[in-house]
Length: 130
Image (cartoon, rainbow, N blue to C red; front, side, top):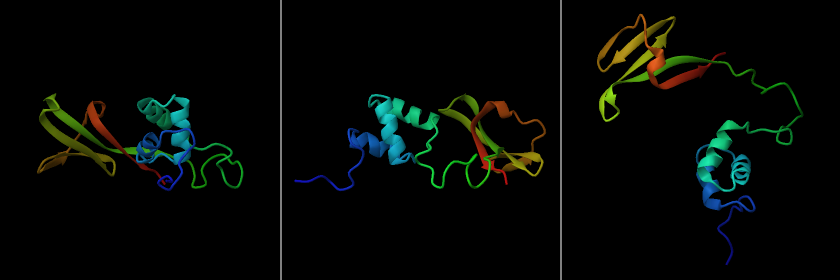
């Protein structure tokens, strides 16, 4: 019998390819990452996220200085922080930028945060600027 439809990239482990594409990496870029790292899935994921996904052959309509939708400029608008000795115990809070001010969300308590410790974040959230 035949294969299970879909082909995939020649010479690349289909399971590894599926794992990387499930992370939002294009099939072509995932296959290249797997080949570049000798099939090591962990290294391939790192390679894929640290190398630009487009090349001249992939671009439609020729060169250009950047993406058609403009320059990618982002601003940090929230920081999630952990307070406690370890992640198994303690408490998570969020600092969110509202206008020009930072606001602390601590369960049901919401208050202005005059000097948020943004350097102690567990997760940083960004949004694209217009």
